Image 1 (cartoon, rainbow, N blue to C red):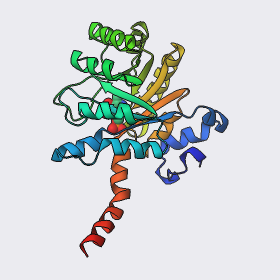
Image 2 (tube, rainbow, N blue to C red):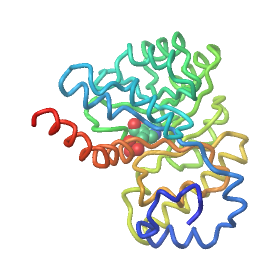
Image 3 (cartoon, protein in one colour):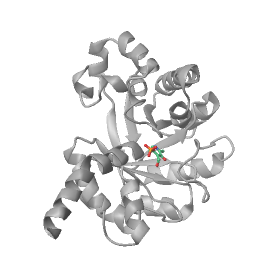
Image 4 (cartoon, rainbow, N blue to C red):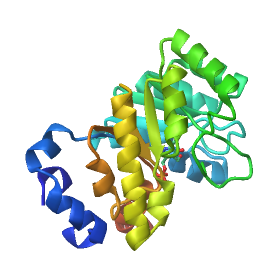
Length: 268
Ligand code: PXP
């Protein structure tokens, strides 16, 4: 197993992964390791379930940084269901690595981003009823609103990424509208199995090539986990992966025994 992935048990590799593991030259892999953006929205979700002050996403960001994260990703939703305005301000002051703010094109939220100035803004679609971001942004339909948001964010000195499905028309337009990066939506890949998953990987690989050929940075995220991340990480010129749920879910499980032991010592 390669050094960068020693924490991943080889037994979790599925068929698609093994295929890619065996066909990717090692040297190229080392030269092109993607950055890891850790999405800490789920920590804020847990805090908001009690409307209290723990767990604190700011503490989570420090731990993620100590663990080797290259970026901290947060989504300030219009309904403020997890991350709050104060989190964004405090994280801007405390995060030493890249701060990536996911946001919709809502005027108010773009205004907050322009004021707080994260290093990067990732524009995502947002629907109140959704459990999480359910698909890529449709920049063909929402061209004017997206272009206006990109202009405002870039005028504030913020690098702009667009969260898109692996669709050539959407990617082409991202370039025309002045985006700096495209984050490919990996949700369909993550949900698919077997041959269907391989098809999704091919679509992501082709879209990734288009993104890079257009001179944009290539990012990917959504639904990536310890079982399915490797083939996506090995798409040529993959620059940044944003992963949240899988990392926070694993943290809960690998940390729960210690948390119980500490409480037990107190009550005994
Ligand atoms: N990238 C984007 C644009 C997202 O909206 C999300 C979910 O907030 C993620 C990545 C992370 O997805 P997950 O929590 O499934 O890893």
